[in-house]
Amino acid sequence: MIPASPRSPVSSSLSRSLARLARPLVPALLLLASACAPLSQVSEAPSPPPATAAPQGQVMVAAANPLAVEAGLEVLRAGGSAVDAAVAVQAVLGLVEPQSSGLGGGAFLVHYDAETGTVSAYNGRETAPAAATPDMFLNEEGKPLPFFQVLLSGRSTGVPGAVAMLHMAQTEHGNLEWRQLFGAAERLANEGFIVSPRLAEMIVGRAPQAKSPDATAYFTKPDGTRYQAGDRLRNPAYAATVRKIAAEGPDALLEGEIAQAIVARVTEGDLPGVMTLADLASYAPKKTEALCRPYRIYVVCTPPAPSGGPAVLEGLGILENTAIADHPNSAQGWYLFTQASRLMYADRDRYMGDPDFVDVPTEGLLDKTYLAARAALIGPTAGPPPQPGSPDGADVRAPDTTREVSGTSHFVVVDAAGDAVSMTTTVESIFGSGRMVGGFFLNNQLTDFAFAPVNPDGAPAANAIAGGKRPRSSMAPAIVLDSDGELLAAVGSPGGTSILAYNLKALVGMLDWKLPVQQALALPNLIARGASYAAEGDKFSPEVIEGLAARGVTFTAVGGEGSGLHGVMVTPDGLDGGADPRREGVARGF
Image 1 (cartoon, rainbow, N blue to C red):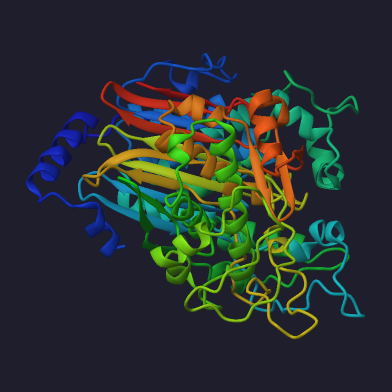
Image 2 (image 1 turned 180 degrees about the vertical axis):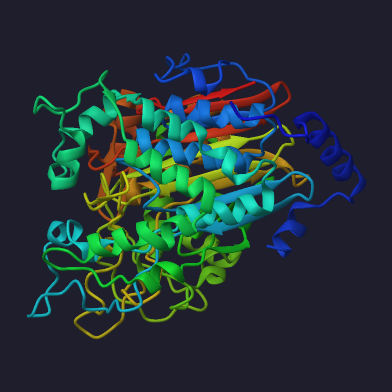
């Protein structure tokens, strides 16, 4: 059990509340200018709560596995901050949900500080090795290599950033000591955890990584059969790794024996990677102001590019010019949602990349006049796929060829002081590259780059590979502030490129359609991109389906990774949390 911090949650909350009352009221537009049993006794996932639940106290964790939620709550009970709990949640998720995120991956985190009212963004996205070149995913004829050939190779792995990013955030916002935050993960790895149905499904799934030599060795029992739901899986190598991270911080991964093992593993086999020990040792997470924009009476904050945050904000900005709030869960409401989504994706796919390497026209894309002009393109019926617009600051860019696959998780934490974390975390595809070191999977994040660096006419791709560059991401953790600049909600989702639509849906559900968090997350998924309308057709009413068809929108089946939304909203009665019913997550608080 974690020893209680001398700084109790109550005293911390009181001091921050007094400080907040003492400072002048910060208007939303000014913000833009600055712009249960302890886990030690638990080894099996507690049963999920009802689909809808009443608000639960003043602290909450919502994440994709109950064991990770309990790890976060244990830290909060000991006086830990939201970031302290986030470290514990990620450490457990990497063990019990390795198909989605882990120590070998990357993440984006948005943090709300209740004392100052500031929202900060932390970028733990992986970077390409210094020796990476724009043609590294092309064959001798200059054609893109087969996607899964690259994915399974060492060439797909970027320098991992999630642990270093969390360490940076925890140094600034932690109440407990770093070494106190890994006990649950170490204990579960040593003693074993119960394999969940979703993990069991992935172990025998069609993803080629599940059949890799490392995954086969890890997921095969002594009798030669694969682990199934309900089996206990132990990972002593993972326990040793988190114990080392607890003692040494991110240097445990980025230097020394584990770093040497990572370099050795990614440089093996066909298409060997070019990562070096120097690449790992030089990795640096980034902290910036969050990218915040008004949406009606609210302010929505996300990480800036290369995250998917600017795209979500553009989608909201387009919808602000429509009457979607007047049409909750109706054919007209969903029609407006689809058309705004198509415009959002058209711009995002053309212009988004790492702003350290390419000019990203964020200000132009989020300019109110530009957003109004994009919204004016929404007619009474759907037309052909919209073309990218021409925002101020946009360079000529090639049409995007990135194939962003799925393997991601999202969680939200609110602590007793009112601080909040919204974090999306990933190893990219299912089990990353399928290669393991120290009990964890390595990412295949470099496949998030465009394989073709230029168009046939020579126009460069914004998301082309370069040494030290971070690949474009759809991850877009969000924090919502009320009109007084105080925390209202936090939400996010996994789902590959569909993350943008999932997050946009949840925000519309909560902010425009005034739904409780759980109901907003459970709304049907509808991803409108280009000529495709992929949707959960069986979740829409016949009236909505007929009304959309009359407006030129007909559904195809949803493909790829489903949503895994998690969210929390502040209400007068306490925190209202929700977990996507499509996965195994829960939202719990006290």
